[in-house]
Amino acid sequence: MKRAAPAGLLAAALALGACDKTATFAYFNIDVVLDRATIDDELLDLIQTCSATATTPTREEMADMRCMRHRIGNDVGVFQYTTSLTSGSVTFGVTLYNYFGPAVAEGQLGPLGIAPGGTVDMQLVVHGIPGAPRVPSGTVTPVGQDGATPDTAAPYGGVDAASDAADAAAVEAGADGAGDAAGDAGPDVAPDA
Image (cartoon, rainbow, N blue to C red; front, side, top):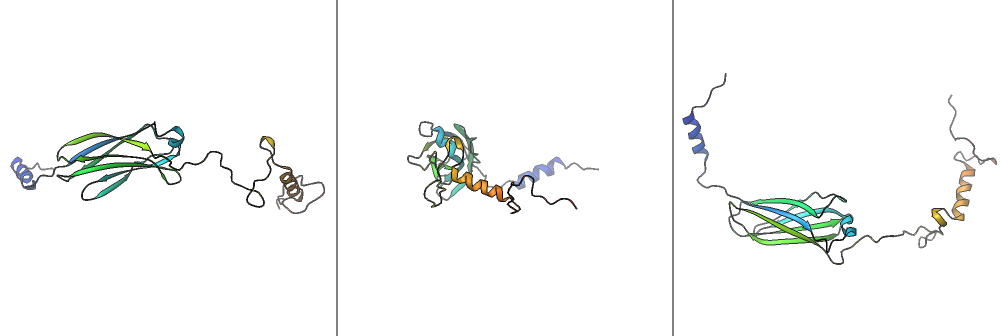
């Protein structure tokens, strides 16, 4: 059986639980968008991670915006920041990084005044960093015997004559090493006993 608390006791408990100092917070909703004039499709394709920072007079806080490569739109999303500071300002920053590490785009907003009990809705525009490193298209890694030049390539994605000869010799020798003159016609597997 449950007992209901008398109404007077509940009111007294609520009155005692209240502090003489009320906690008020300042709220910020920051909508992050891309400046497509400085972030082209190639650069957008490289972006893998996004971070947001909030800098106040007392500290700097960072958060991962959980961006996913190939799933970043022109509107990156909204992040929210709450502070219990009653005065001062906050500056927001967003940095986008490519999949191999360096920053390729960034944006900053502020300083914005902190108003306890208030909510601020703002837009932060992220711009491409001029000269930010990109993966060059068509990069070829040398694979030649001297390590400096690639082997001669055959047309239409085939292999060159030297590679054909080496492959043919390896096949003729067979995985079992027998190297029979007729070639390895069957699989190199031991029969079941």
